[in-house]
Image: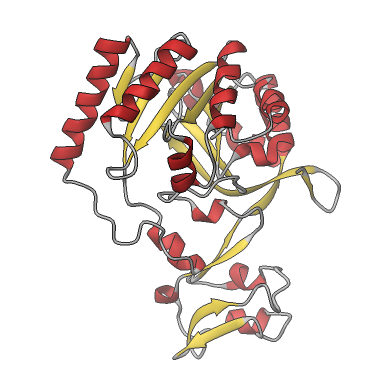
Length: 329
């Protein structure tokens, strides 16, 4: 889906831009998080990127109270009808009933108790932000990474932005689940230097239970990525009790060795981290993992190193525990 602004310029709906990131691709990078996702992973740390639409995040603890401030009510074209308060503090915005998503309340909130998640940005606007740190990219071998959500949901805008980056000699990386039509993937790949993707589980039914989608299309697209000669990093989030048991990691290792010919840059085993809970709260969405508690660091760290060693020694795979090991590209 290609968004356009009032002037007809192509845009992407972007939830966040992070500068100086070092874990999603080589060197120092600028990472853009596109909204919209075809999956719904239990451990997702970016719930604001799942829906392909702007949303309002609410942080009651930051609210100055309607009596002391009240700017959100004063500026609301619906006379404050979508806004709900408890003891004078904002606790809900009824966007689907009366709010016309003008986001005037988020613009006026001085304490950031109301935050807009998702903003339309033109290709030129995104490129200007990316190009600001060109000197860092040149010194470190960095560049831009498009992530999400799922960047392939907005594949047309992604392809246009990546083309603009390549014309500006900026290294490009796409982080994607690859649960997408092949033609969209290949259009985005035309100007992509590095691809980062996941294999969450080799059992498709378990994959679907944990992420909302089976893995057949994903595995097929991973094979096609290798056929196209794209540099590829594969990751598995290790969530004890859900993913990362030795039998499944060995199955992933066999797939990389036998189906991909070990033609990957790196295979990364990533530890589960409880992140994004405040964003879930701000959107009024229960955290899917509930009160899940992972093992102590000493336990999961040793397990990740053990699994990585199995993959290196028995399968000949360039495996690493975590994402901090330098990429050999």
